[in-house]
Length: 124
Image (cartoon, rainbow, N blue to C red; front, side, top):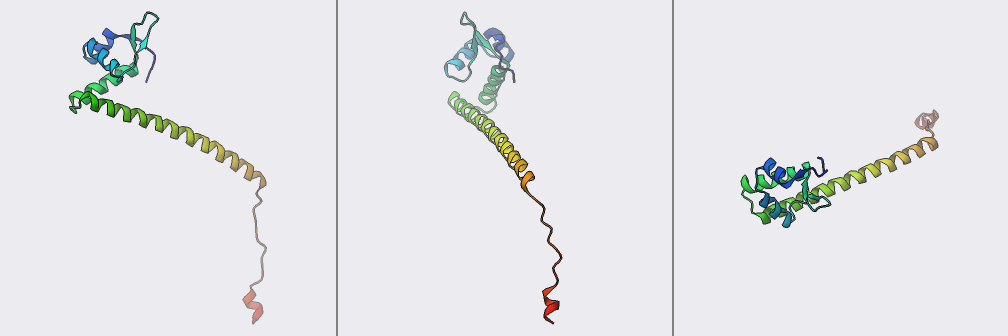
């Protein structure tokens, strides 16, 4: 998802079928965080527009109020952070394991036991 700010509030509102004032209210509630120009104009990214569509689905299709939407979005954001952290940890673990395997490949010698006579045959 593209995070580059590109849409003015009127365009973003039209893309999601909402009133610009609704977008301002969602920003005040912390549900969306549009970028700002040097002149303080809101600019929404594709990711912001997708988030606004999700908010719209949660409120219209699932009937959630804004408090419920806040909770769902917070949990989704936390899940995404945890997934990214897990991916980083898995990557670091793979690198560490590769290093260990490279070290052992140099140091290990395959053991091939010699043929030993069967001890039971000698006893008889």
